[in-house]
Image (tube, rainbow, N blue to C red; front, side, top):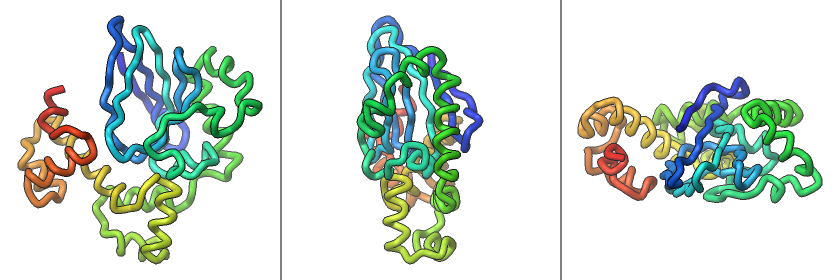
Length: 228
């Protein structure tokens, strides 16, 4: 009932999901991304970057289409700093105003899988593209580069990097790095790598450290996520 594919705009992913007849609750893990969403029940929404897992409750038969924009891209599309959206789900009209969104909902509802990427592409073009440093900072954070080294690489002092990262990602580079490391660790574990080996490969002190980090962000230990 869940599918995703490249959206063809700024590295974004287009995903679709339909809740089963009995409804569904989904644990959405932090990923540093901002999503532009259309729901058959709620219309146009924005999901900000999460610091902890969000429990999404879908009513029976509810259809979702989402454009998941990679870390740093969402603010350029939406015109809103990521830290103002952190841990929130808000109607798009709350950001752009009722007049700007008037009529947009009907056009998106006719073909959301085509309309959301097209809308994002137009907005991104008007903004001059994503922030130039966003992809560099996110890539360095994903690679485990220390914050001081990232700051030196992008020619910012650590405090300026932190402020810039909050606007782009919703949190500082250290938190982003921890979230991206958790995502990598879980992907390896789901592929069958034992947790102790996952911890070593991903740079955790030990398996207990991995478990604490996952619990901090996901609310449950990795074994619970893997079982689900």
